[in-house]
Image 1 (cartoon, rainbow, N blue to C red):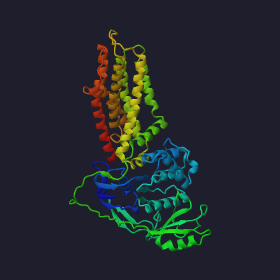
Image 2: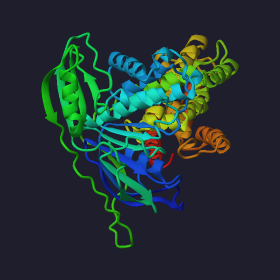
Image 3: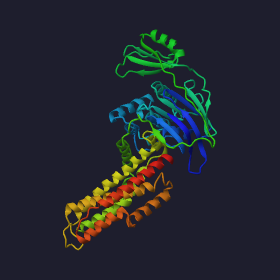
Length: 531
């Protein structure tokens, strides 16, 4: 992974937090970031994780990524294992494998007893174990840890140390920040200090260092390893052969470790001994000044990384919306409006137009709920996997899908209650054609409403009061402004009721699709630049 001329500031005129960072992060490397409080360490980690885009410069070669934020939010309507399964699916794991890995990591961190406990009921320490588990269950190639040890008990901290060593031994890059200067002392391959908005090379904290060695051994399936093995090696068991293990330690401890294994009772048989490749030296070449060449801004995902399905992200967003019960208010509003305005025996086309118009503000509301329902830290965890733009689009699509389902139900209700006649009841209206026109009109209003909701919520508007006022005004203007696809669709239904003719609103639908796509593209781009 490579950063070239990367800089970050908040707002077009805000002060620079980071500037002119040139950094190479090779695979198979443990990287420590140091610096005083407030110098921008968390901002740098967010850039590395792909949660934020650089204001200037370029980030390239980012592999599959997982991120542990400094403060993990417990206020999510999931149990611990349900949340981990959703995150596993977002990472691309099948559901069964995600469930198995979730149970495994909760067991390793001593939180298996809380697997079915709602996140909101977990202690800070148990919640932090879930935060760490979500980052490890999919075996990411880039693991970014922002004070991940904070809140963990001693046993869980030691387990996280081992997990970090496993990821590095398997070829991943791990970048971490921790307030304890002894954290992973001697294990970090590279250390950098962040000061003055840029990075400088720092001395690696002392400890056991040197090239790593992997030892493969077999023993009896029920045999336990001797306690207190030299070098505190990382232990991996072969799931296909319970008698086989792999131990990773430094070369300095390899001989004492081999002797301890051979002299154990029962003894372990050494089947392999191989040095692990040394990390490629990383470089930091800070550059600044007016003669630094301008480079294009924006994060680039690694070409070889898997395409994360939008379906998994939408399932997560839909589950979050359903379990939070925030969908109930817009649903009740739409039902109340239909109950007041749609009566038994009314002309069909009039009622379809009314139902479509009522759907527009409800669609805007649902989209606003979907893009704002996560706490910022939870949103950052999700954004690190596919990128913030993709995560934001999934939230928009979830809100739109809910609106379309609600519009379909509303149109169906109208078809059951209304009469297929013109307004003066002198002309019969084709029932199937009217139904199709009503569904297309509802789709137009849902799409325009989704665009209004997207443009009136984060990342465009953050203040709740301004966002709500803009949503109401935007929905009203979308229904009354000439040239609006929603107004054209509703007007076509109502005017068709007067004449008894049905015109399918294909042109308004095309316009609504264009408006919705433009809003989604714009806000998804902003989501990568502004939280």
